[in-house]
Length: 152
Image: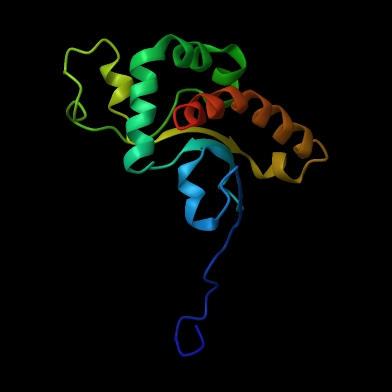
């Protein structure tokens, strides 16, 4: 920025990711909890953002073997209240190693496995925000555990 004509800030948000990853380079190798604070665009989130190679293969294998557990997590009343549906881009075709007729093909097509709770500015500055974060992340825990179980 020192020599740039555009002196606007590089980052206009506060972000924090908490996971069991031992190093920063491993941050996308474990599901965790993410807090993103930005006026008009704050959120609490978790899951697996673009998991790479072995992890995405393991997640898909876990879904193939144990889809009922994931479906139960996604159908939980509190999960739906805070996150709605699981998010993440999808492949157009079946992932390598899976037939297009696989009963769980729509879950297997996900490229990211995310749960996102968008927060209003009013929520973020309220005295109850810490309690809200706690409730959201408690609800997120089984989802993250399912994703991490795939590589444990």
